[in-house]
Every structure is written in C-alpha cells, then in structure tokens.
Image (cartoon, rainbow, N blue to C red):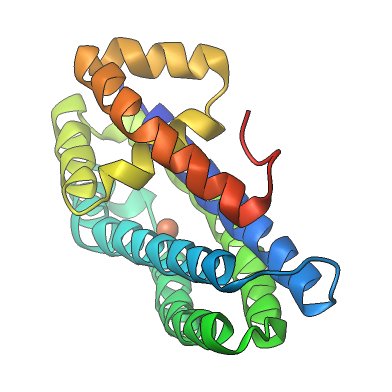
Length: 213
Ligand SMILES: [Fe+2]
C-alpha cells in the first residue's frame, strides 16, 4: 500500500485555482471591467483572507509535520531547502495581500491587490508544480501509509472544513470525487450537504452568477 495523495493534490489545485481566479477578478475590478458594491467587496476581501490563512496553514504543516517525516523516511534522497525558501517568501506576500484586501473593502481600489494576487498566483504555480514533481514520487516510495495518514490528519486539524470541503468538491473531477467519497465515507457526504449551499452562494457573490455549477 502506498500513501493516497489525492487529497493533497486537490488541495493544491484549489489553492492555485482560487488565487488565479481572484487575481483575474481583482485585475478586472482595477480596470473597471467589473464593479463591486460594499457587500461584494467585503465578500471578496473575506475570501482572500480565508484563503491566505489556509495557504499559510498548509505550508506551515508541510514545514512542521511533512518535512520531518520526509527527512526521517527518505533522508539523503530529498533536499527541501528550495521549497522551504519558497514558503518563507510566500508569508510576507500573504500578509501584504491581507492588508490590501482590507484596504480594497474600504476604498474599492483593487489595483495594488491585483498586482499582489497575480504575483502570488505565479509563485504558487511554480512552487506547487515543483513540490509535486519533487516530493510526490518520494512520498509514494518512502513514506509509510501510517505516517502519511498522520500528516493529513494534522493538516486537516487547523483547516476550515466549511470552506475546504466544498472547495475540494468544486475542484475535483467526478472520478476523483468518487474516490474521495470512498476514502472518507458517509461523514464527507453529510458535511458537504451542510456546507455546499453557503459556499455556492458566496462564490456567486464573489465571482458572478456562473461561478459554480
Ligand atoms: Fe509547499
């Protein structure tokens, strides 16, 4: 048995997808191609802050929980320095974006936010592509299923299920969702039915009526 990386993979996909969509939205707002009243602006800012917290948490858990597991399991096979440097570079940008999101909610000016979110989207694309290319084969080869389970449990602990689960459903392909349902069992179906509607309402408010199917 090898570790099941699907949950991590979809979390990565959702992070990249949402930051890119927000970067595009902020650019269109800055250029006057879209508009946002107070309610929409606040929803956009809240989503950005929540997403940033999730990205920070994910990388913190990689540093604190996954990296030691990799070092213990794979030793000299893995060099995590570049990926750790990326995490350190991302943190100040996330903090900057939080400030810019709050400023956007009060002034309506999205120009600084658009630039920073585009930078974050580019950085995450590069970082996550590299991380999956380097680490996924090593995790599959060297990490035990029990250790991987512990990593996933720790990552999930500090997450926000109300936001994270419906986002996974949004970004998973139907066959991937079927696999996730099989892995997680009935609690996943129950939680999704609780959180799906609110998530879709917020997505439509933020990204427009066609945001989610
Ligand atoms: Fe990472």
